[in-house]
Image (cartoon, rainbow, N blue to C red; front, side, top):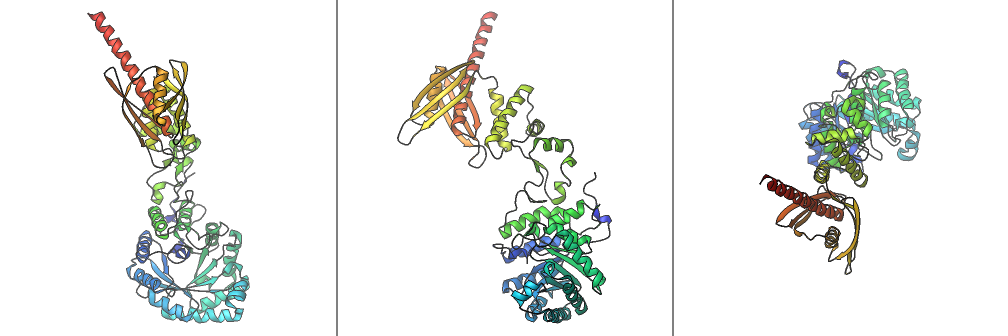
Amino acid sequence: MTTETNETANTDQVFIFDTTLRDGEQSPGATMTHEEKLQIAELLDEMGVDIIEAGFPIASNGDFAAVSEIAKRSKNSMIAGLARAIPADIDRAGEAVKHAKRGRIHTFVSTSPIHLAHQMKKTEDEVLEIVTKTVTQARNLIDDVEWSAMDATRTPLEFLARCTEAAIRAGATTINLPDTVGYSTPTDYAEMFRYMYENVPGADEVIFSTHCHNDLGMAVANSLAGVKAGARQVECTINGLGERAGNAALEEIVMAIRTRADAMPYHTGIETTHLARASKMVAAASNSPVQYNKAIVGKNAFAHESGIHQDGMLKNAQTYEIMTPESVGIKSTSLVMGKHSGRHAFKEKLKDLGYELGDNQFQEAFQRFKDLADRKKHVYDADIVALVDDEVGSSDDRITLVDMEVVSKTGGEHRCDLVLSVDGEKVSVSVEGTGSVDAIFNAIKKAVNANPHLVLYGVDAVTGGTDAQANAHVRLEMNNRIVSGMAAEPDTLVASARAYLNAYNRLLMERGAAAQGAMEETVAG
């Protein structure tokens, strides 16, 4: 299967209408500053968004100022201002976008029975009159006018067709039929557009637009269904930001069309390598973090932890990725090291970190990695470095930790119950100390029947977080020899014990090497 088809070979363009700065900002707590809006608009313009809905000019002086400034600065995108079907709104929107190279007034009115009865308190005939008057007013101010039927998907098709016809006759150039409350299904949404094309005079002379909310999780699917039924503009937001469950996500719409051009023979003008950057910018400005498993731009969108997936990725990326991370502006695929990772991925990670281990050392290191991953949420490169360095240095240890229990009590005793394996034999001791670490070190000294001098003891965190590995360092002196030991564990006390044992084993190794050297000197003499 070929992925990431080059859809620009197709001539049927879908125009991207971004409403992050208007509908997106209406998301609770997502209000952006003036400068943040300008920065986002600049990036949207740079990445090839066709229409930027910069705000709701009548809403506040700040909104008006932002729309006006964005209109002045825009180099490529058309700039739209939203207006209710109220004369003052339409005038204000026209004033805000007048300095744009290409400006648009986007006006809307409710059409569904529930909105007419409970919100507008208008009859169908009154709504038709409002549509004609307000669209005419907008068209007298500007050449490009978009009209939206709020709650279109809960509006009877016959009445929706009459409203659409009225808007076209009054001069609307774009007709938006939004799924305002995220109620529709792809089949129903597509049928609505087909009905308009078949029953509205002049439907083939305007652009129809989708605008879908995600209340049932179908915003993107509905939008694409609308496109397949004839709509050639999609209204969407970066990260799917928007009221309630949000809007159709721009990055998902664009990458779906790009990746599946075989099923959707259209193209957009979006430079997709800007998507990740836009996502981060909007997330920061709107104080709306992106969920880890968010399609296209989520932290895990190009991350693989499963051993089967990692193995496939290492052999051929297309086994589990239908688009490249670079295509959306992400540096590279991430093979996340965790409890689901397999030997292949672990070995590749070791190579990346500069390690070449023998079979036995690799198996021991892999087992320790799996044990660590069971206890720790995130295994970072630094964790693996500490783990392997520890493993390489302790593979031939004569004395190893079997079990340890430490009792520590405020104002009370500190006791360590310890079990060591000494040359294959288990030794158990129970010793008290002035603190937990003192009790541990005293217990080790008793178990090995030796009393090396502790020159240095220190602990630091390998990575951040409360589950970070503790990297313990111990320096021991005995018989005029000084050695260092280290160990990394999520448990600080276990790390301390293993670091002490690591150092003591080195003392034993050096003592053996010194004895062997003396024997060789005697033989030579």
